[in-house]
Image (cartoon, rainbow, N blue to C red; front, top):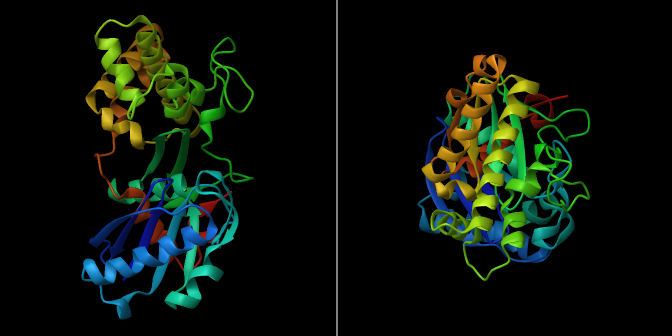
Length: 308
């Protein structure tokens, strides 16, 4: 049995995966703040799987953790996980003495990419585009996670597609993340809301001009990310996941319209059949936790699951 955890800023999703790759147990817990609390969350989540999901503790052979921030390949050392209050944390050193099982970690988006690839059939090539507070992607080809020379492969969120566009937190203007990131949209909307991006869509449908501008920008940003991923990596498909996928068909209809417009203007873009190569990850998918479990169980995660 292998355990996978997706440690997010507010919640942690944990799954138990059997030898056949099937998820046989799943729990969700609130994520603590700071290195000690994050460590406690991981331990509590694994124990919850054994007490509430019927997983035999003696059958657990590995633990993989998907977590925001930078992770040293092949290890469980994470740095700069700012939305968890973690500057530096070696999860293996923190967790293994208590649980007695090998622990490895991976950046959360890269873990989700690997999990989405497995759910997608585990063949060919795929880019996973995560739409959340920020925008990032992971690329998997022939079962291997592509990191690039310095681990930044897939960081499409900070590609500027409009030099006159909104200011991005990275300092550039018109980045994909500044247009389509949930955090950037919430800041520009600047109205009290639990679900600001959904409120933007609702207001746009009601005729609010500024909301319509934000909504158009989001669709353009996502469509730009799709084009970049296909044009640079020529992946078979682009699977979209992350919190904004809760918008479902409302989001995908806007993105499809943007892709169709570029296809209508360019025979070359038309030949790429971008609309047919994009799909939405089902809401509530355990892709990130599943990917973390698979990475945690790999004997050589750096060599087997990464190239570059």
